[in-house]
Length: 61
Image (cartoon, rainbow, N blue to C red; front, side, top):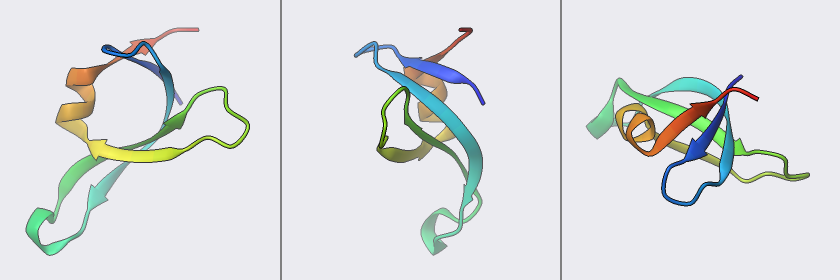
């Protein structure tokens, strides 16, 4: 799992997995499943892969 930094806020997130959107209108869309890094009970998110790669950069801790 990789840690990513949000380019606008500087917040850190842990990339958990890559997943596929299976809703009718977006069937097959590649998504990133990620969560807040370093939190005891982190919030979890999904975002379209192309958007994620535009807004986050990998950090090598």
